[in-house]
Image (cartoon, rainbow, N blue to C red):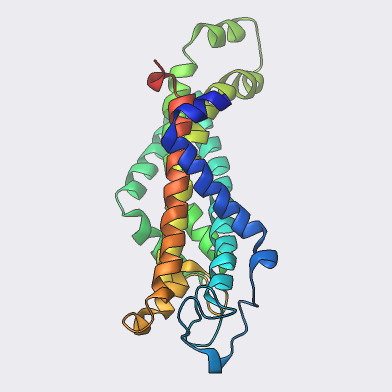
Length: 275
């Protein structure tokens, strides 16, 4: 994973720039935001972009759009990061164990994955979220419950291939413990696949969170989240275009950047894409 490889991949470099901009906006939101995103001024409601003190305009309650977009990046990236970590750990560990030990437990896990994958991801996440309730923690739970199966299937397939290689067979013949074989010899060889899936899933979780919040089951107002901001602006679409344009653009560019980074990581880490 060299710097030169990034420079040769223009789309990968663009993805890194977009993703870095989103991370910077999230981390520096308290510094960059010109106003408190929770407090509005009704006398300043629906001000267009370019208004003095409000470069991206204001919403119907007089809250600064730029400040809310910046703080919305915090919510989106926090949910995406937490969900990726939970799904990668849970799904990756289950796939690791199922592929290494096999038997009926592995078959049961795969049939469970098949059943869950038969449902659309966003519909399943929305259903789980409606059951567990509203809030930031519950949306992470619902997205994690819907997304772990991808890691389990990918990792199990990789483990089934890796455990047949000579170095693993040699370690077993020398009396190496199963735990050491699993975590010292097999896990490092399947880790690139986990990283690739995580990078590609990250943008899916961000978009799914926005969709769930848009429908009113995710992050609740007045917390600034891109999905809920889009939902709140529906009634003002024809008179205040900026209320949907800026959070929508932030969501699209962030998802695009993360996807491009994921594609670049796949090209770098997956030997099948190396020439």
